[in-house]
Image 1: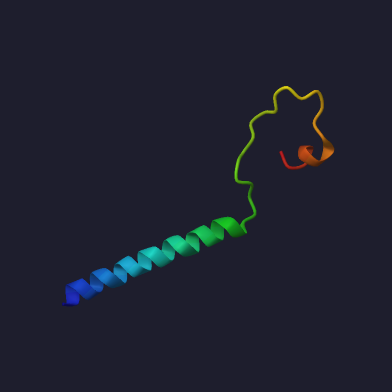
Image 2: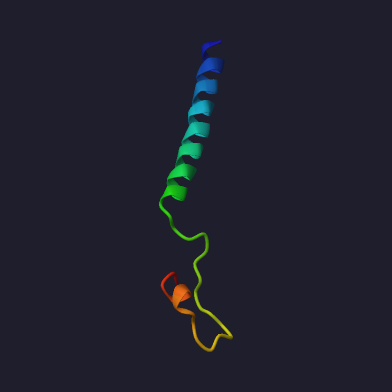
Length: 52
């Protein structure tokens, strides 16, 4: 019984760790994608130039 409860507690801690880790990643405010280059644009609009 103790081993089963210990396993459940460790599993729950792992799930909570994943949840909190994903919240931390979201709160950093980083963009979802990193753009290496922009193709087929003659000029980059000012609003996009700041975020790239």
